[in-house]
Length: 188
Image (spheres, rainbow, N blue to C red):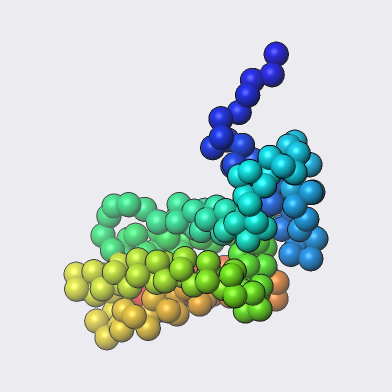
């Protein structure tokens, strides 16, 4: 006997199907019919949950950013949270390369697509605010470089992490860049 999925599970299935197709085929290969087939629903069901392709992509952006946000520890000193975040992102990109692939697709597409650009700016702004607050706390506590401009450093951290998802910046450079960023931020 088949059990019916609750709406949130069905929605998540659709987001994951779109995420997987983006990772495999990029935006050029993302078709809503293929998403519906992969999630084992009909196209009308997909449109019930996501009336537009942009809404579906919004769900993917939310999912990907959630994967990145999961790398931020909720407690600890600011410098420990920051360093743990950088290490966790390194592991995430190594263990789940499709997250980086989709993030890269979204970053590249956002330059040409105003709707995706707005979604990405919103998530980037929230991420920047979080990073800036962590950096300020770390400097104030004397655990990060005292001359650190938290706004500029937050922008650098996010730019570095985002650029590491682009196709040209594959695995070995990701590790090197993140290790250097950790050393640069640290006051020790």
